[in-house]
Image (tube, rainbow, N blue to C red):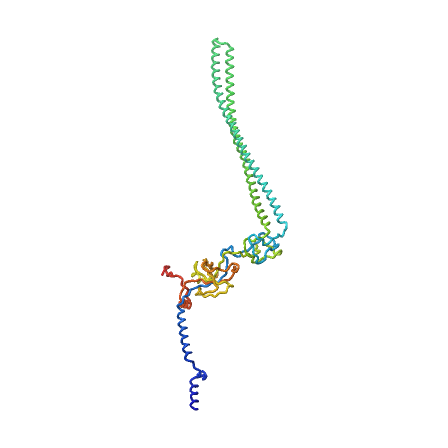
Length: 442
């Protein structure tokens, strides 16, 4: 009895907790624990050699590829108030569908604008008639000037011709006077000799006086003709000066009339634009889409031309994902890189390094990488659907603005190397050769 008690005391002395000292592990349990530890160690070592796809992540939203397919404002074409909405938020519209009607503060403004347009049109017609009248007067003045100058030139030619005839008459008169002088001298000599009568001498003297008078008349005619030529030439200059002054006045009046016509034409065009805009008292859908928001209250808000009244989400045929990437990851991304996308509202399980076992994600590829950031160090990347992968959900479910997460796939490495890289904070390596310090290739 004492021996048994002493053994219990020895056991109690060896173990601080006597109850655990009495409980022992079986050999099988110890053997299983050793093998599980070995298997776990081998599994961890094997996982270090498993393939792993490097990725860089970003988040963003679904947008339309074409900017005109993105949300756009529908503006008021004229100043006024909304009379009535023909749509509600969420209404599907087609191009040209009536969205709203606008009323002006003055219900007679369109009539007044049209009356002003008619008045401006009448003034324009009058200005055009004045331009045509002045053009006709200018042509008539020029024609009259030409005719008068031509007529006066003909008179000058006639006066010059008369002068030539007068010169010929003078030469003939001088010859006649010389002949009469010679005949008179002969008669005087004959009378002195008694060969002729006094009557013959008187006839010779009469003939001489007639020839002298004719010569004086011819000379007077030549002088008159020369004076007439000079007067006609002076008339030529006077006619040219007088008509040129009238033509200059007519040209100045024509230029002023044409300026008035151009001013009235410009005013007419402005009035036409004003009337056309004022006549456009309806707001039509510019393209097919869905009314997202109505921004004005009927009858109460005063709108200016160009104020937004509604937001339209166009029916886009091509959607893309706009991802925001860190500046540290952007140099690793290139056009054409594969991307895995997770859309908000679609349950998904994404394994960053094993895209082949991901569930609920969709494939894409990089379409565009922005050349500059958004001012906060983030770079925008556009991702389009990958034609070699499953199609994205239809536009009826994948709407613009849906949030999305994206993983851009880089190259494949070993899991152990990836863990070592992340533990050391090294960036992924995507190039086979890196530029050296001098700018060449290593």
